[in-house]
Length: 510
Ligand code: GAP
Image 1 (cartoon, rainbow, N blue to C red):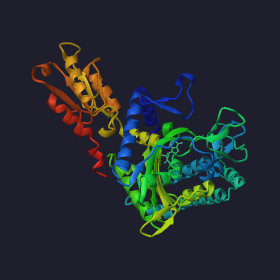
Image 2 (cartoon, rainbow, N blue to C red; image 1 turned 180 degrees about the horizontal axis):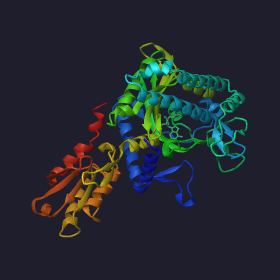
Image 3 (cartoon, protein in one colour; image 1 turned 180 degrees about the vertical axis):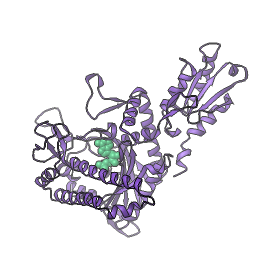
Image 4 (cartoon, rainbow, N blue to C red; image 1 turned 90 degrees about the vertical axis):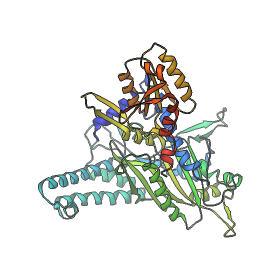
């Protein structure tokens, strides 16, 4: 997908009330966004789809809603105070600040693009082209690949040893220039903690520094025993929650892909030590199924296994999605061992253990985590649904082919004209549908224009009320993707709409 198309998606999101820049009248706040009337509905529907699939459909997963503010020691125990850092570097000429790891990653991506170009050229030149063979024997490709491997090895070593001088040396050796000034006049690299802090308490001497949570997971860990005991949960069991998280991202770009205030949907699955790899494999599969059940092309998803593991993990992968700017992380699945619970035991002095009646002993469970960004999921749905189509008559339309269950509006109720009792009849139909579905009523503009506006926000059905309706109590129902129109009796409308947008349409595939 091109940059142009991504720009079109962003302006479409604004024009049709999905996403606005935060505090736009004051020129906005960087990497913070507001959801408009259609965006809020779509976001709610995605959150509900996740909640139903994770909590409602599993008798051993409990949903909670922990507070954003947590005791400051939480973040010491989780490792975020000491290790939730990004390596930053400034260009002295442009005064622009960058993430050193991103500069290096982008440099590697440029070399990878050169390899792809060689492959494409060769593909055109040779018949029966064997890409694998070409990649492993072509001298120029091998030279590029060696460069990439050398950079990756040096970067990995430098980060593991927290050797920031080496990271800077790598940037210099790769001859990376500032995209703004074009110079290599770099400062030293230094670590920058991503947590936002504020103070709690009204009297300054008594106020203590607290953090806005950078992940929702810790609210689950500190409530592990509360939920286990009050819900009489038996291992294996999960605790799920959705909610806001905050990170002072330095490189905040690509619209809602990387935000400073965002929402996560996380689930921690507590298992018997030694069974975590089995559960890790099962959750990888289950989560991929959840994504695929929405019906977007399977080629849009792939796994990416982490080579460099976080200090708490013994296995980790991402589910990547093909965004308009390429394959990027959408969801993380992590086998987090017993790191978090053990660390909270140490810092709180409280036991966070489970008595296993089968084993007749207590232990600290291991944890498999699934963690997905709701906003990132929103962007995935929006970009996979966005279509610019040319119709048979030569006219164009933009349609969002959002899975009906997730669509912000399920049905638009449209009187053909604003007279002859049609608005009253239309309102009657709206009033019967509104108890079950979010519907929309509109009488302004030609019917064609109204259809286009509903296509643009992804409404699965438009219901048109005309003079025939008054005579025989039938309406025209138009389907969004095929644009096919059918005449059906008014009393059949709820069944047709409910059937199309029912959670069963997706949940039964899981
Ligand atoms: N509890 C584990 C955890 O937070 P993570 O990989 O840092 O892991 C999980 O984040 C997911 O949260 C990501 O896969 C992404 O979808 C989302 N996410 C992380 N940072 C984000 C940001 N700045 N803006 C939007 N979404 C973000």
